[in-house]
Image (cartoon, one colour):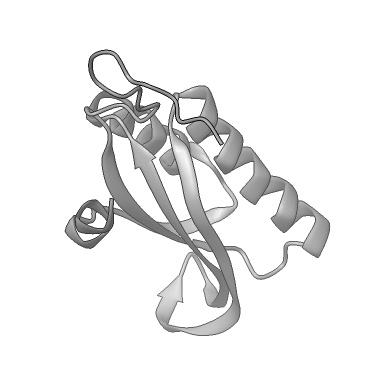
Length: 117
């Protein structure tokens, strides 16, 4: 088996300007499974269009809220780990804020994900 020789630095496809983020959002409980899945795929597409990457996506399911939000007492919780450039975070934030199906969201920078990379 032949080994490839690297001349110069090895090619790394990850952008060094990308940071790791955790995104949690709560969707309206009245959404059908298809609409919920379509919205989650839409968020993934947004991130990919911004040249980011979704590392992990997990639907936690329908849970009671600690207090009513927009007259809803329960919501569908979705958790995502993603890599995105800091310039694109504002655009993702704007898009989530304008979505009527999102009751609340939280987008935070994750130091743990950066340590794993």
